[in-house]
Image (cartoon, rainbow, N blue to C red):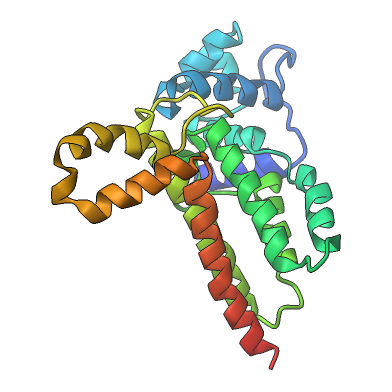
Length: 256
């Protein structure tokens, strides 16, 4: 983003709604514009989104759209904010995890990670849109706030807590990216019924190993176990548990 784009994104995401300086009476809303872009991205991916396409979807001219949003960078910022699940929706799950027997930061981060994963599955283009230097909106910062709040009182420094959240988020992103790639990298959401990366890998390698399994006995045995256990979240949850195991050791050391 340029400095001008950065300032405009901050104003759109955080400032009060601004009226266009000129032109016809305001007839669109930023939310409606963002949702139109989200619909296009869900169907075609982020590459299918343009000011012209969104304007056509809203039955206005591109010049009319520019009175509300100055360009695509700012449009994408609004789309991210609209597409991310409201972090307030996590609060009940986080509270239940904290109140459960033995519940605490680990259970809360598990709820948080699974919620983030479902957000990426519903809108795979978010993986592309939420990288690099950019302005984050209230919802995105709300997700970060809740993850950091789960680690409050664990004895970690602020930097360690931030790095821990980034580590968990990176794992979630990696699994979601793998699933998106195996699905062909399209714009549409994965859906709750889709197969996860492990199950797809079994299908892809099954024919080859069926004929040459003796040459790769360890791989054949491992994939056989994956096929037996199944579950679309196996790779996500296994990696998450190992990350939390390691984080638990650090928390334990800080508590000594």
